[in-house]
Image 1 (tube, helix red, strand yellow):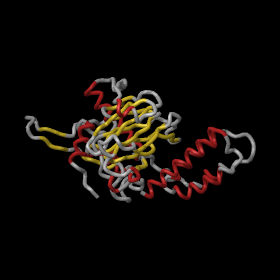
Image 2 (cartoon, one colour):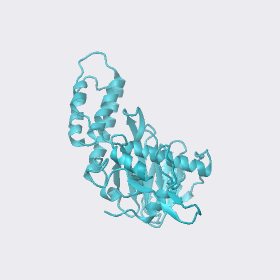
Image 3 (cartoon, rainbow, N blue to C red):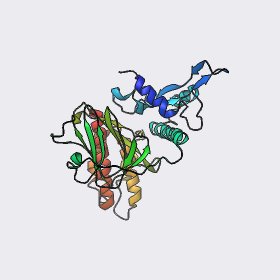
Image 4 (cartoon, one colour):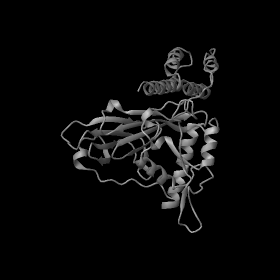
Length: 323
């Protein structure tokens, strides 16, 4: 396993503003003496998902090579590092990602003002536009690849420097700078699905999808795809961001065996997503249960669409498990 790189540390400390990311703390992590000459570094680069399976939140699946990347780290003071690791039930993977995101947004507001959202402005490249079916809205040119984005939806919004959010987007790649080759299709974000967040740098394109989570009754990060420029597309890295539910699966399956009659669609959909959350840790077994639910009398219309949605999520979890 690679250790935390110098580049990753710079990104983590820079985005956190050298302050503790724990909500309400924000203590300075570089403490100077009275003369402002000698500094003491008290910040700790904490893992959101532990390096070891037995560690805090270590049961959440993550590729070994991603454990020490920026996305799995949060900058904390020693006190709050101890708290999150000794109370993992209170500080889930999802909660820590949200805490980190909120803190970095706070740092950005302090640095560049309150208005983070920026209107999108881009003058298309006529050569790359010819490869698009709709509107060319992003073009990143790096040594190993050129990445470009075609939009059939609205303009994306920059929510943090270099991090964009939108839907109706199609991402492509040219393996090198040559434009006489066929573009490689990477990913398509449907307008019918929640917006995705994405960023691209000299190493990779990263796209994070969102999904409904009944535990918070709202949208939350589901999985992140990382397309490294020097690796084949089928070697993409896939990280499930949604923490699995460790509740027993049997009560939910029993509830979904409803007798014929009136049905509360919203309640069934809620139970289907709860079943999906449990199934993240046992996707193959839960997929078998899902197939059986398709024969239920209530599996029609919007409920059938939700069942298809959560089935797709479990297939993604199974893919991540097999990578």
